[in-house]
Image 1: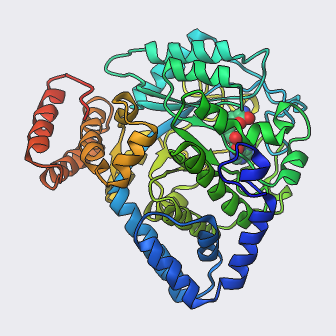
Image 2: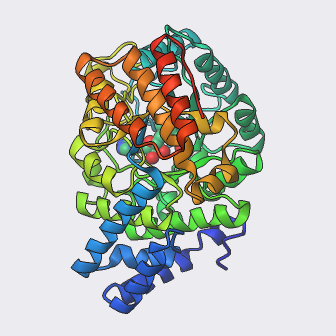
Length: 473
Ligand code: SAM
């Protein structure tokens, strides 16, 4: 039944295969020989199968767990250096016809204020985001064919790209909307989206159907096969994720990796990124009502094992998590974070008091973007506002090829330096600017992309000081 090349959800996420990998992991979690063999393979930095990764996730040998965490850190450094890419979510509408039991946007929630941004309101949100320094956003919307039809989403994307306020611009719009048709994915592709993001929520079909009792999202196969339709439509950067807390984390972990393997097997290109959200408190949602919550230690192990199993795939952590938790996960493999986020509709331009708030969930890391940037730099990271890859045609297999050969540094590092410089010139506080200028000096000095690139970066940095913008490799 299990067939990673099949386009049928129940064949590429075969329940029996998930159970078999959990059994394999349980059997081998204390088997040093097997674990050493898996670690040896992992050190080649070409990834692991879901079964192998499941053994590492379950491994109980302290000394081997230490090796797992060290390897995750090493792989993170080798593929992503010290760069961390920044983005922010933009909530367009919280109208929704689904019945997802963990989400306050569910249809039966009558007391959350419903809101859909007009194009004028979207402009205001975008200006507020640009004034923070953001260049990359992820748009979010509930599923509602009447209130949020695809034409509304497309028009909103056009509006977002059109706003040029002072030196600001949103250069990459990623899209997190409900599973849709090939025809609609084609429209999203044609309008120039970055990544299509869709969280599976849970891969366990029975649990999925129970937690999505009503609405179009109830259809497990349609949701699980969404990335196949997106790829068929030409979107080659897709981002996976599960909502940890809904189902046993071991099950989700193996199935998530099977999904990544499926995309690689069926389309020749794995997911561009994987998100690791955990369920949060929200209007009429109590996370303790879900039995499968995971603590910070298990969460860290999951992130480390995903990093080892899929070295080429970006990993995203949102402001659902606290600064302390995010700091730990940055070491272990996270390459992209949101900052200064608002999860309410219209919340950037017009922050609302709690009782009027349309927020999807509580954010834990509430620091303004400038503080997040300063914090990253103080931790030794290079914050990046780069959006270059997809604008230079480096998507899908072209991106993966460069990534696999580890040439990605030659593009990403100069681009990170240049976009950080833009941020410092246009938006940073004095203290952040001072720390940032020092960092840029140091990073240019140790740039490994050759003398030609180094000279170009130094020239571009000067031009940015003189007011020019948007240099990219
Ligand atoms: N409506 C779209 C869909 O059906 O996929 C996606 C947009 S939704 C605004 C983005 C994600 O937020 C969901 O996929 C879900 O995983 C996550 N989410 C929903 N409720 C949450 C909660 N209480 N805590 C944390 N994340 C939540």
